[in-house]
Length: 170
Length: 170
DNA sequence: CGAGAATTTGAAACATTATAACATTCTCTT
DNA sequence: AAGAGAATGTTATAATGTTTCAAATTCTCG
Image (cartoon, rainbow over all chains, first blue to last red; front, top):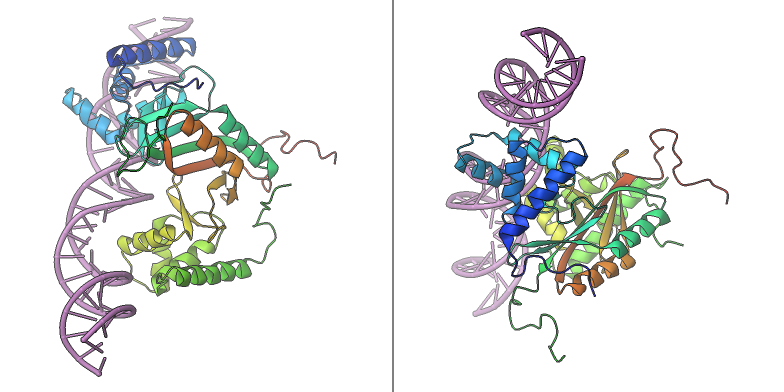
């Protein structure tokens, strides 16, 4: 019933990265923005997992590339990518993740599995709407919304013997 | 219609702090937790404004007290206070604020004014519910939820001539 | 009370995340 | 080719948070 499938379950991740990069190119072209080599490489690195990556992780990967980059290089690339809606920053993790809804108007909600570390971005209009209503109720004008939910994803077993998704009697 | 008034508009802030401290004492007693001198002082400092305070701000204030504290002292006090539901951490600001719903079961939502810096904590069940539904929809089990909205509070004038709360025709 | 256990705090060093400031190189336009 | 603006390189530093071990305090129970 949900429009949001789990995009990282048994998928062709190479294609997933390639798609993201192709989309990014198109989006930047449309916006007259320059997806330079560093920026593209950073985006690619971020897309190499569905786990958020810290800026210094990226820095290390660039170093492994032979690129002797300093922190500002990475942060600038990340700023650019965020500004163009290609990556999101997860505030509760100080980390960055590729946007799975790039190019579409959306208000993301992030489901962060504290077991496997994967993050799923949902577009949840009902959540945004509820937030807008609650804000308007007290006369607050929302500008930017952060919704980050940490918990257990359906791929991960529940810690002890607790039920996870309810008995599968259907 | 909202149960959440703006608690920081024209209120007696000394009483506000005193109440918070009294509540904290009661809550800790009930939970057999020790609200020691440092912890209480940190809580008091946090309550001295409705703006979130950074850990190092608190550290500086303790220093002004003549207390030569190191970072772990503050972080430990903050951990304790969070664990007992007396303060919240605002992830998008790396800062801490007193909980205005201490002692009650709630899922906070934070309205952060980027003009005056004040933060209003709302208890918004509709938002929590929407988040729970959206999570359940993809089989995710929420554990901890972060909802932080930055924007313009009703106390602050809109930047240019834009309407803020709509015409007051009622 | 008083010994031992547990909790809390002190203190020093260190790790991680992010930014400032300024020089240099690149890219696009004309 | 020249100039303007954008992007990157480089160095240093700021801001935030943690690890570790030692000392002090408080609690428990005989």
